Amino acid sequence: MNILLLGQSKVNKLITDYFYNKNINITGISDIYELQKLNGEINNFTAQMKENDIRSNYVIFTEPPFAEPAEINGLKTFSLYQENKTAEISEKSSSGSLQPIVFLLDYIGESPFIATIQALYDAAIFARKKYPVYIFSRFIRTSGLRVEDLYREAREAGVNFIKYEKICITVDLINEEFNIDTFDGVINSVIKTTIIYSDGGWDVGKRFSYAIKILNLTPNNLGYITEDNFFLTPALTSRHGVFHITRDLSSGHFPQQLNDTLDYIFLQINTETKKNSSNDHVEINEKKCVLCNNCYRTCPHAALEPDLLINKMKNLNNACRNCGICINICPAKAITSNNDTTVTANCNVTNDKRIILYCKNSGGIGIKDFIFDINSSCKDIEMTELPCGGQITSESILKYLNKHTKILCILCPDDACHHFTGNKRACAAVNRLNNMITSTGLSNGAIIKQISPGMPNILQEEVSVFINNP
Image (cartoon, rainbow, N blue to C red):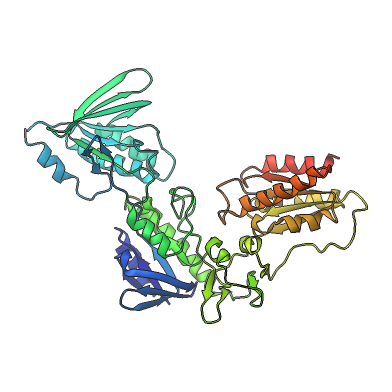
């Protein structure tokens, strides 16, 4: 077994040592620009490099998002994420006086979680050296491993915190000095300094953008491939078998959390080696496929690749999540699921029969607590679990309506879909059909509810209303 370790990070050596102790070989490529393309699927990846190809079973991507720090009225600030922060201090303090050191957060936009960690960690170090240190931010972030401890340590070291509502920064270009005027809702604070450390907000930077494009990973609406907080998604990306060590772990301040994340990856690897390729996946009818590439561009999991030898699309079964998005978008209807859950229309509705369609990542999690009560008390209620709402199309809803009086579709909230756009496509399909039905003078037959798995009481209430209301 071989793991491709891709990217520059402080934690690369720790990762290499971890898997070496597990008797797993790691091939490291630090320069992300050496990679031209990543082909294949889990257990069968081929990384096309500039000079040679590298085969691997899994990929661990460690390149952290990195953007240029803020430039204010022509004067650049220093990067919050740079390693050595003493060089600027020694140059700027030649007068002998210890001038203020400012850590500026949330200036370009809301700063990511790691910016707070980095600022707290470095601010405490400077404060212990008797520098006057300030952290300016719009938000206080205390959730997460040891973050409250970092706040306490920074306060005890003498760091000054200013949570501002308004901020105005002017510059003296001749003396390269910043004048910071903030308002916290009660009083104004004014500080002059030549030393500001800032981040680039949620901008991920050129290297990271290049990497996610070449790795064919699906980013969220902020450009990230995993959640910024390590406790939400520890290393999973949209592409099966490709893991990412998130930016906060790359900072090196949480070694125990890094070890826990590597344990998680190792568990995933052990689990995958016991699986076979008979998982649920989509199948492509080569006679219908015209290689329009719509599915290739749309698949959030990089499970579809053009087969240029036969000019048809092929599906990588071990990468496929069977979310149904490609089925929904294929204009030639050349894609079907090997585990089709659609209903065949064979009769008209003769009584009040209802069906609940629920995504396994939203309703599937929340409904399990009271599914027995539904089954035991409501004989005319059917329930079907889908891998993703992306399997719901206007045509499938129409077929369900040929046998059922009402349909309840339980989907993930916006921007929470594990397949990124499956819930949005399902909503669009249902709304499109409902609009057509309404225009004919009939009542809507399909109801959409977007509910988080963390909202079981609301889910139970919605299901109860659906079952009991006429």
